Length: 68
Image 1 (cartoon, rainbow, N blue to C red):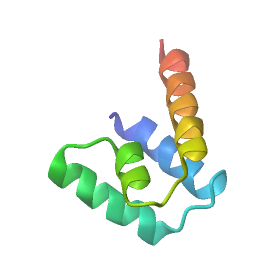
Image 2 (cartoon, one colour):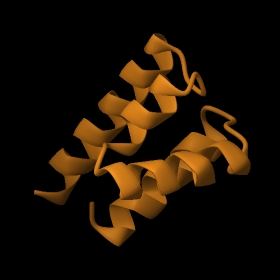
Image 3 (cartoon, rainbow, N blue to C red):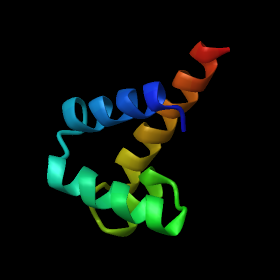
């Protein structure tokens, strides 16, 4: 993911979903190490619900559309 989009995603996770920095940082480490998508790691470790995961994917879809 582009650095600009990743910064936007992290801002969304902090501000809209109120995820703690520690959860985001841990998920980022695991996603980089395992090559997994950050949203999926957040869900797998129980940091977000399935409804929040849908919100994240909706946000990502809008971010990709606005970049076109």
